[in-house]
Length: 235
Image 1 (cartoon, helix red, strand yellow):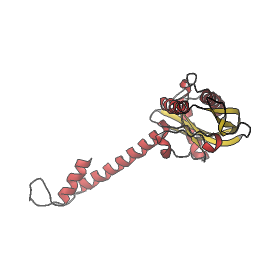
Image 2 (cartoon, rainbow, N blue to C red):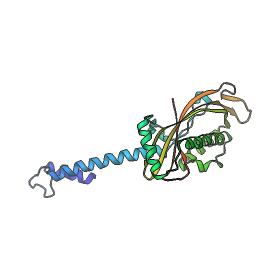
Image 3 (cartoon, one colour):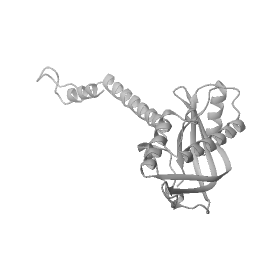
Image 4 (spheres, rainbow, N blue to C red):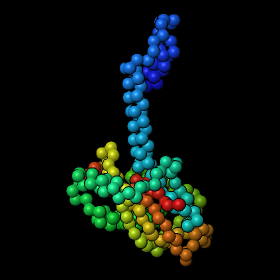
């Protein structure tokens, strides 16, 4: 693309391949070609950005809540889901076209099961039992964060988890995959202890904290298992 555009600009300035020949202006064909290239470049950029958002999810909990702050480098590119009913209904409709058995209530129940299992695996510092519930990218991100906690000889505890609500906020299809984002509103005891002494170094064992998080799940289009691909905590 750079070579084509560069050639067009040089010809328009009189630097043709004949070194000194007559300079010609940009014709209709060059203008149309230039416009088409710009359009496809923009479309590619938008698609690529959304794919990165979906694929490079991150897991983060507020340091004020529990003293843990772990995330992947892609956090700045995450866009908070839109809570627009029209977009959600359209997205769910597209998903049902390829999977007529998709049921929102069952999906929310499954998401809650995923939520408790993944939170429990994090607190136990062992993802072996939940890897099938996570994308490969999420497994790597959480494993890396657990590794850093182990190096610091700290354990992040998540106790008395109570989910108050689970709501679908966005659904779409892209590149042969389904994506659905849900919002969890919950409270729990979130604190970090020193592995050697058992002393609480941040958070509280008695004061529960409330939080809202967006969890995005994905799967190949059709009736396939869902896996967690991204988490965004509401600031």
